[in-house]
Amino acid sequence: MTTAVLTTLGRIRSASARSGKLRALRKNRLAMTGGVIAAVFVLAALFAPLVAPYDPARPDFAGALAAPGWSHWLGTDDLGRDQLSRVVYGARASMQVGVLAVALAFVVGVPLGLLAGYYGTFTDSVVSRLTDTMLAFPFLVLAVGLAAVLGPSLTNATIAIGISQIPAVIRITRAETLRLRHVDYVAAAVANGGGDATVLLRHILPGATSALTVQATVGIPAAITGEALLSFLGLGVQPPDASLGVMLSGAQSFLAPAPWMAVFPGLAVVAATLAFNLLGDGLRDVLDPRGATR
Image (tube, rainbow, N blue to C red):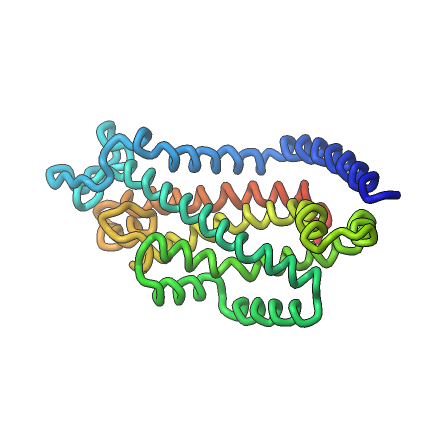
């Protein structure tokens, strides 16, 4: 068969498979629940100025440490700032870091994984050793170290978390490339004179999309947790800007008189990470049944 015929048959099978996977995903209640909660966080982040009832940085000393009520649904902090508004803007910072850090990891990690898996030998050896060196450090330890070197800011926290996620993206992309370069339509493309760029971008990369999609849904909650930790340690968002980690750090001295200062931002971190993890588990079950049974 020619490359065109093999590619057409592959696309037909892929379209049919995608339709079945969507039906299976809709039947997964936990994944759909996680998807809905994740969508709520994303929408709240996008429309934070419309959702937040107050200015998150405006203090009101007369209303400091007010308990949750009609005026302030989640109460106020030690400076009288509305907790709900700060949680909304904190979720905005978390979503920003989650999306941008994963995007940075993919921009760097996917090309390196493709090159390592396709060319092998020296290229694979160099990329693999670099990946193994970075993986020797736990994700959060590496993120904290990089953020400390770069300096405290939301941008630097995003860069640090994105760099820390690059090794995982490289390994997944490399593994998918090693698997896909031996399938029929890729072999046919090579045999018919397809250039390396054509084979990688038109045949191998689309086949690795499912695994990379799952990795993205796993990377986002890790980035959210990382941002909260860096901000808690003073290496991320800087006061008076709102961040879930900053809110948790500021609540340490008020756990007894105002426990809501820690409870609500903590619940927001848990809800966001749990939502994306549930969605990621559902996508993995649907897109990679082999991995679901391991």
